Image (cartoon, rainbow over all chains, first blue to last red; front, side, top):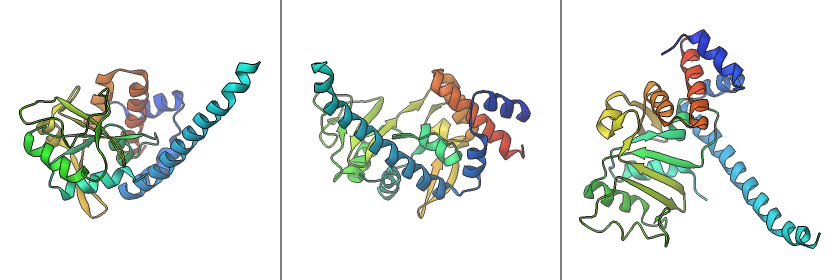
Length: 64
Length: 160
């Protein structure tokens, strides 16, 4: 495993939210799974909404 | 839609020996990335195929990579060998991998795997070090970014 300070710095430079990691690490694995499930459900709902919007918007774009 | 962890409970109830790998393993280690699917590594033997069928029987499991979405309850037929099984079920997508790039098969993964209590079952999860190796071996941009996040998690566990 590399130098911990270097790993943190590389993650920061890559735009990784380190505060969110702290928040996750404070949870139990079960709590992490439940938090992830909520985020996954939201992501899938947004995807579905996006697909429905695309479908409804297509005829309008075709008219233009 | 059922939750992905329901699949883990079912696999455990069916007596399947497996190690959680991929993005879901990352979540268990503390990753903030959201994954749509569940990846596990197991020996893909006729016995384990039978256990998987028992676990998934009422979830309409189909081979998601096949043209006609063949039913997993009927395929593979006896004697047919698969390296990996890519399924779509009513509880979500689950990939059963015979091996993980950069690490090896089930036995190599199980050697370093950690055990976490999950909804009343002990669940084996790829070690953080092996997950980093696997992500780096995959080499895609998204995997390399995940590897950086996992390295930060490892650093934080050392008190950083």
